[in-house]
Amino acid sequence: MSGDKTVLGTMSGTSLDGVDAAVLVTDGERIRSFGPTAYRPYTSDERATLRRALGRWDGPEVEAAARIVEAAHAEVLGGFSGVDLIGFHGQTLAHDPRGRGTLQVGDGAGLAQRMGVPVAWDFRTEDVRQGGEGAPLAPFYHFALAQWIGATAPLAVLNLGGVGNLTWIDPGQGAPEAEGALLAFDTGPANAPVDDLLHRRRGQARDEDGRLAAQGRVSEPVIERFLAHAFVLRPPPKSLDRDAFAGLAAEVEPLSDADAAATLTACSAAAVGRALALCPKPPARLLVTGGGRRNPTLMAMIAGHANCPVEPVEAVGLDGDMLEAQAFAFLAMRVARGLPISAPMTTGAPRPIRGGRLSQG
Image 1 (spheres, rainbow, N blue to C red):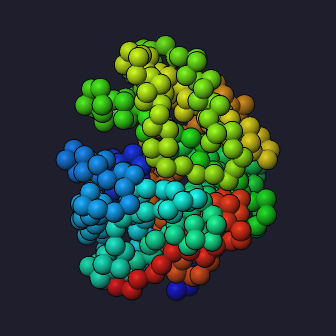
Image 2: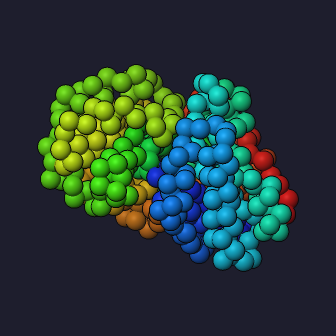
């Protein structure tokens, strides 16, 4: 498969909010244009089923989660036509690259048969098999975005989903796998601890607009202990499971709802601050995508740790709700062409990795 193709990418992230779908016209190296998008939210019951499967590798909970993921994707994909290829990430339930590996549920081969369109999927397994972290994978797309917006100075893209991840980009390099083009890694928890706190204490999905955190007082001892965590201190590349910092719940248990939300939000921002200090050169700007960019409290806290402008990606004309779905459209095209989708400075793999599987429709 060569030349520009119309590719439909999908993403169901660690925030467990729903399925994003976005069309991208690309050859897997350059972005040509952006197409239509769609979003299919999970119901509260579906979200509860997915939560019960988090951290599990097999069993009835995993099977139930897979059925939900496949049905939700088929529903949203059915609203598109005229696509040449689909990029299907699936839903990450467990991620332990130095142990059992990585698990994204959802059968891409079955989806290809159902949709009648080739599907690129299972993006992470080969990277992990060859010694990489298997995450993050969006950095190759971030490199293409830097070219799309005409960036000339190093910049960084921060995704704030359930977990935070940072991509530092030198747009002057010729390809994303080139030495010095990228440095990418998970920063630490982003929205997941606060989302889980609000779910547990108030039955709410999130701290809407960061309003509760804005009313609270940050517990500095919790922040100090968080910044001493082995993951925060570890040099990149590195990646996280969504629940790797589940111990934070116990740390904030004695605090009021507002103080707990403020403290967990401050932990996420402090992790970004530490991550920025690890960049090869200070970025000229920090562009933020993912749901966390809509949280003014979190964004203000991150700005307090950054020595550059901190802006949502909409500041450069991009769609922060669909960036990851677009990324898996871009990566799907690279899989179809046999191009690398990860490299040593994005996942810690020993060499650029041609990962993913391609199932014909």
